[in-house]
Image (cartoon, rainbow, N blue to C red):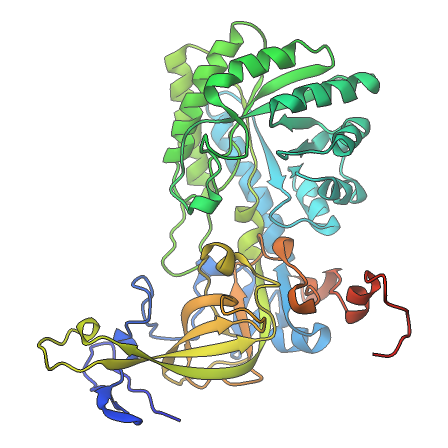
Length: 508
């Protein structure tokens, strides 16, 4: 085993030599070139940054606790991996988000409606929490619709999205009385109109359009390009609205746009709203347009480098932008709707893992990265420690899918060991099976420790898979010192039950 040199924050300590090749120096933690530029070595690798964790997650005698329940008891009772949800935190964020938009838009003389984006994470319990908080729910498949209905949600409080809703999904949505269907293509106009006519209903619809505004985010998350699968081009939208209005079985509510995800500022929303309102004003000359839906995509903090705009500040900026644009166009301010998901449920949850192995890896680094000069400068060695956990891309695929960044903390204890640069790896047979690309943990992290990855409430469970035949983890809600299962984890029996060749009780 090789030793690793460290340097204090002032950079005074000298780096050590690499034992297998004493001519090469080991970069100290403070200047490790393998760390991304945004990641700063912490003065305390046990510290919990409040922006990354739920309000009720703290350390108690060194152990991570959520709403009064420690992770050691959670792991013992439910096993790992485990999604741990701070129920009170989710509920309070839902209430706060709704209040922020209602307050901001009442200030400009209109109303605001908030749909919780079920695609972020939806279960029967979460659907109930959202409606109890006063939110509506946005679903985008027959399965999500089924969950919302099973939760007892009033269908009139549901919005139904999707770029390729099946005939059966449309029929069911119309039959149960979904409050609004978002039309995503010209073919859907006739499909929804036909379903409504057959069932003797007038179905309320929105039209999704592409404003041409590209939010500053990862390309895979950007959904307002003209060259993409969602919505209708802005210059074709007026004709589409005319087609909607030609059907007696449809009621046109207004335009809808979604400019992307994990957005920190308000500028993209303001620009998109301005473009939509110009079309909105044009459409008012030939009929009613009561609403404008500006979608969601509000960002959260995943790392120490993230600094999202608070939701109340965002709501206020967007409201002022809408009011100014309506005044310029000389039109009434419409009712406005939003569809946040991540900002409500994302920070509420952390994923708890058990460490299986640790593996320091020596990486050759050119001398130029060390700041050395001259032809005689020698290459150095940088150390990255791979910490493998008992989950991975089957419970959080976002890192592998589009390079999402996460953070990690030792959960079962604190340590005064010097920090080391780590990469949290999963147990799947993929080199890209990474959960946390880069962070610092105490240098004595070891097999059997518990590691917690914060801000995993959105797009982790909902994107989970059975890759390598791992069962999807359970989801545990914790509130007032009590932990309970809200989504059962999968067992090997669950995995085998879908295999047509499996006979119950058969030997392996």
